[in-house]
Length: 289
Image (tube, rainbow, N blue to C red):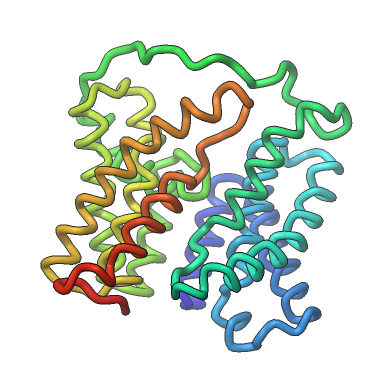
């Protein structure tokens, strides 16, 4: 969303979740953008935010998972925001061969390396014991109350930036709305699909209510209908299928990363969108934007 007003709402949402996260988000975006300028990345790309948003995600993610109050986190956030520019550019060159965007893959790579490696360093990891654990079968009630449903609806959007608070998700949604009504509508559709699929498959209500099962569906729905694929009835159906697939993949990726102490992040969105966008040239009823 190359909209400054949208960006302001996103910043407000981060500050609403905690002033430290707002500062980390601004720090990451600023450092990544400055790095791109210094390295001579095309100004139109930089000014559209295509080199800064992964820096924002990286810095915020580091603050959430390493703790925002440590000097080591600040240093790693700055270093990660610099490095992610190189990762983004490398992936853009590779995937650009097939006209496929990088999505949030650069952030996912940086964040996954951080969460897996951090417990090995005492001056970096302040979370006690290592989070690595063998996956176990889901337990807990699956019935969703009204409170669970509306918290999940907004939580799915807030969890894009790792924030489960409903009001944070609401601010993000307003930000998306001022940039694109279509994208906002598809974010809502994706959130509903994520809730429904998670409930239908029997995901514990506590996780659904926190938005942990539906945030990738939100991203996929927006990407596949109006952002990377032209808006239409067929792309809408395509996005619904993709959102449902991303919800199932969210659980799979959580199980995959558990033994390493890693986190799902937006890997399900990246993998689902990558496959669905790459498949578009084979379908005459769909076309890229």
